[in-house]
Length: 128
Image (cartoon, rainbow, N blue to C red; front, side):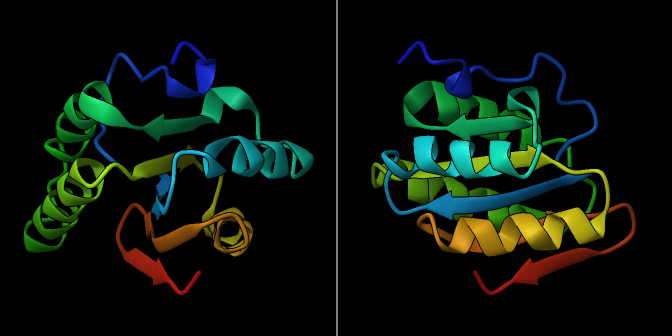
């Protein structure tokens, strides 16, 4: 898939910090989620979708940079399992926790689940 939605950040040194991340039941939801986020004024450059073996590699690289210990390790493993089952993962760089909450709500209506915001000091799991 050559869509820009599947391009990945070249620098994951910051890990997942500042991103809201969730699992998509199917990669087919990625396009509708992206469109909904665009209506919320979220630029394409802030949205990533991890899918397939290339997505798994990028996912491991990003989550491997997390310093949050057990929670991040659990989320990393859960993500690898999700990708291995043919599902997808979305990640959106957010401006603040309030925007993360809005994105979690939107994701829930577009096949998103297990949505977590990785903040500077606290990780927040949303029920999407």
